[in-house]
Amino acid sequence: MRRTSGYVIGVDLGGTNVRSILMDSKGRVWGRDSRESLAGQGKEATIDQIVRSVGVVLEAARSAGISRPSLLGVGIGSPGPLNTKDGIVYIAPNLPGWENVPLVRILRDKIRLPIFLENDANAAALGEWWIGAGRGVDDLVLLTLGTGIGGGIIIEGEVLHGASDTAAEVGHMIVREGGLLCNCGARGCLEAYVSATAVVARTRAAIEQERRTILKRWLGGKLDNLSSELIFRAAGEKDELSSQIVEETARFLGIGIANLVNLLDPSLVILAGGMIQAGALILEPVRKYATEYSLRASIRGVRIVPAKLEADSGTIGAAATVLKRKRLL
Ligand SMILES: [Zn+2]
Image (cartoon, rainbow, N blue to C red):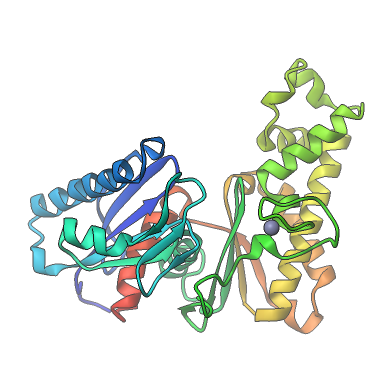
């Protein structure tokens, strides 16, 4: 694709912020906006914030002399479950009151451009595939390690949606039968062990059982201030408890990755989210355990790497969704 064939807008809808980006089809950024999602004020308030945010990047387009006909559409990366074909958000866990919202129709009426809906983790995977860590790789899995565990799967260059748009719920793979309780109601899900929240909870439980750790001194007794960043930092300083927690976290993540690798045969696994800031401290043991638990033929040549787009992955992925649906990628 030598010629710029148009411009796209990507919106990342989150529980805290609404972010927008204006890009051209070659991946250059022409405008950005970020504002609070005002989730506590109800869905109308949040939808108004989306419209305002898109308004700001549309203004950037006007200032840059980009004509309205060259704007191909707006991609929305939203928490789910949702329906990409009908454009409906069924439930958004961090957006109270969002139930069966026909978001695509509502936004099309207000913005008057084609609107495309995608699950936020799928969008992040698509963004990394387009211009991030997954560039040039057509079979990849992305895992987002945050307060929950999200996932996006790209096979043969296409996002895997499944029959009802719920594919790639990698956080709810069972990695230990009868294990810790997960937010979804099941026991032993990957998310119940590996999310930042879970890492903190496991460490806290150990501290409350009088395990020795440098974290006690760092926190000065304020256990509520415990964070996964702190635990990784303590592991970096060879704190025994923290090192053990990181090792366990890496093992569960390795088991999850091994299942994905055996099932899907990707050539790349991308890890995104705050925990990856810990670098080799987490990546090295994850690679070790993923290799240990995978079929040798499947894991051979699989790279496990950190995401590249970081805070922009949601908006860029949403923008890429427009190009993908228009068959321009
Ligand atoms: Zn679960």
